[in-house]
Amino acid sequence: MASMRRASEEVGSLDQILRTPLQSGAVDASSRNRFQHVKARIRLHTFALIYVGYMTFLAARKSYGFWLPSVIASLQLSKGEAGVLGSSFEIVYGACALLNGPLIDMAPPKYLLVGGLLLSGAINLGISACTTLPAMTALWALHGLVQSVGWPSITNVFLAWFPDPATRGAWYSLLSTCQNAGAAAVPLVLSFTMAHYGWKASLYVPALLCGCVAALLLLCLYGSPAEAQARLDGVGGPRSRGHVMVRAPPTMRELIDTVRHARQKHARQRRETLATFRESGRLAPPLLLLLRGTHAPLPTSPLALLVSRTTSLASLSSSVRCCATRRCG
Picture (cartoon, rainbow, N blue to C red):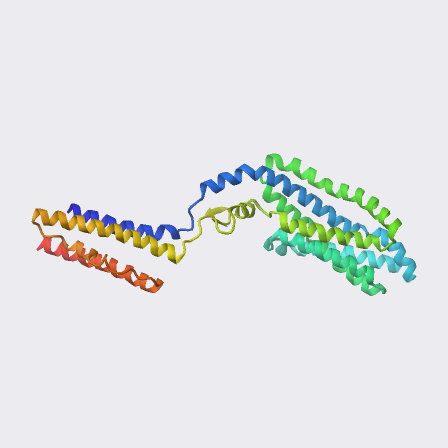
């Protein structure tokens, strides 16, 4: 009976070995500790990036007041026509800010920010090349759509990194000053560049800033702590699913090696058990017939491995039933 229990435990351990590497909920404690050590520093970097990111959004749309007088003079527009150009942005911006909630919730905020900045830069370059009022109005209205994703995406990143209500208010007040800082810096920069390079510099400079900051956000911004932890773990390390770190499943080669080692261990147990029964002169239980083929070559294909493992478990069930029948009889 002791040998039967030991053989059954060995088969059970083999089944556990096969299942354990494929479990997706094993938490990597060392990875989590390493991430907690650098989380505060990454959070400060993220705050600085979204602060600069929204200042760039402001620069792309606050340039309107600097290039508009030159456009009115060059195209000989009336004040009413100039008002239509300005109102198109505000109308589209307000409507899209109200309607694009599902997009903000579904799309990653990092890529919304990067895409918004790139499109804002492209629209500024397009306006600098326009020579008609309808084309300018259409582009500036499209700019309102692009700009409407800026602040919601900024707040999504902020809330992911600052979830504690006890400190969130102070950080959010600091983040809100990016609008004042942008409104103060944009006139200084654009006035200087327009004085040296003409009125189109008020469109070229925001476009250049949008491209540079978009590249910076794409390379350095983490949209959430889970994304940062997954990046720190590397491509081959544990992967992130939501907020839980799990180990990557093993390859088929690793699985076959694990089974081979287990079978070698079972072969040693078989030889020791049979030697014990020979010395005592007793008949070995039928359960040991399960271990008869442990010296056979291990299948190398996934399908053959699955068939072999299923057959072994079926043989175990049959042997246990046969042994129980003999003892009851």
